[in-house]
Structures are given as structure tokens and as C-alpha cells.
Image (cartoon, rainbow, N blue to C red):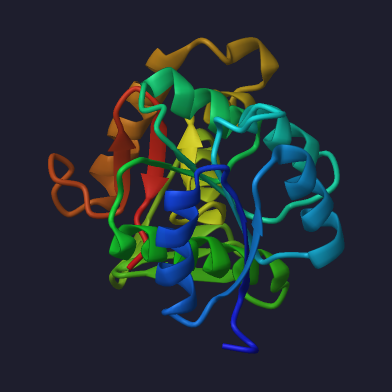
Length: 230
């Protein structure tokens, strides 16, 4: 436990802190706790955590503002844990810079899985010598801009490849409609969600064995898409 990943928990509810303290330390994580957004920002700057767990309903600074301030200088994964469960709440948090979103109440196994994904993403982003991504039968060779399903090469259009590459680089994380539109089509297209439906349908037909029951490219209804990680 002395060498486990360091989690910064920014949460003002004592009962939730006790619950998470037991869950996280019991699974080998180190933990730093903050009850306010201001102290959380200070702890993030001084302790350099591996993952931030952030409640949105804080007594001093709204969690969205904490997220935006963290993103001004840090790429540490932020997993929001909040009782706000509306689609727009999730979209707002993800657009502010959060990496994932869990609605209270949630189970320990799901929380641990989301933390593991965040840690894997950080490790993947830090590695410059891994130009090939694999998950199940799907393989993306970034150096050659080639995509394979099993042994068969899949030929994607430039737009389809950009969509898939963005989801792969954020594997396991929820990518919002707005982020996809911004990075694939540009700033003038951030409301054109019909583009996503059309191209996602085409992409699934090419990389999924059964496009109606996708294994890799998952829909988060009303929010965005996620590339499934094991």
C-alpha cells in the first residue's frame, strides 16, 4: 500500500468519505482527502495524485470550476462522483475536462474499474514507444494508419479513422459528442450530432462483428461514445 497509486478524494460528505476510504485503502490505493474545492486544488498541486475523485456539490467551489482550474495546468485523470445524474450534468462535467462520471450511489467494483481505466490511460499516454493499440480482435497501427479486425485489414475513410483514433486514444473514457465533433470536424460543427450517428454507424459496420451489438464502440445515450476496455 505504501507504493500504491495515490488518489485525491475531494468530497465534503463524511459518510461518503468513510465509504471510499475503506474501499480504496482496502484495495491498495493511497488516499488524500479534501473537504473543499479550494483545499483540493492545493492538494492536487502539492501531492501530485495519480487520479482525482471529485464530487460536484462542494461547499465553497462548484466541482465544475474545480475541474476547469485543474485542467489549466494538470492532465491528471478526474473521475467525477456525483448525485447529479442528468445527462446534461454529465456532459457539462466531461466538457469541463473530467475523464469519467459516476452517479451516486455506485458500487465499489465499478469505481475500481473506472480508476483502473484512468490509470491505464495515463500509462498509455505517457508511452511514446507503443504505436500499436490492441483490444480483443481490434488492432490500430498508428504509425502506418492501418486498422485490423482479426487478421483482416479494414479500410476506413479519413473521417472514420479520425473518429476511431480519438476513441482509441481515450480508450475506456467517455468522449462527448462535442469533443468528437470539435476534434474531427472542427469548431463550426459542434452541434451537428447527426454526423456522429452516420459515421458511427459506418464505423461499426466495418470494425464490429455484429454492429447491432457492438463489442468495442459503445454508446453513452445522450452524452457520447466510449471504446470498451477489458
